Length: 125
Image (cartoon, rainbow, N blue to C red; front, side, top):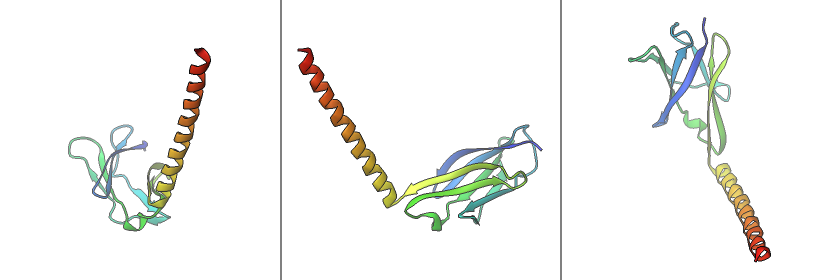
């Protein structure tokens, strides 16, 4: 059996969508394990694409995964055990702290560059 390739197509209205294709172009309906914190995600669908040899995967983002911090949903090919993709998102206070820390670092670097530029201007005149 050939390998499956999963390509994200969009995240829309709380549902992650992707296109599944076999490397050689054909194969049986893919059987996947989609898990969040080692529990199966409900209502995952795999349907044939109407215009190509691909399969459409739809994964509804579980409400219980919407928490502060980094959350990851795993998508695995059940027959081979190969991880096809992950859905990762960051939300809440953890994100705010990360962004504030990044902005602080950028400000410090900008201040250092301003001082170096001013010193350079003074020394070259």
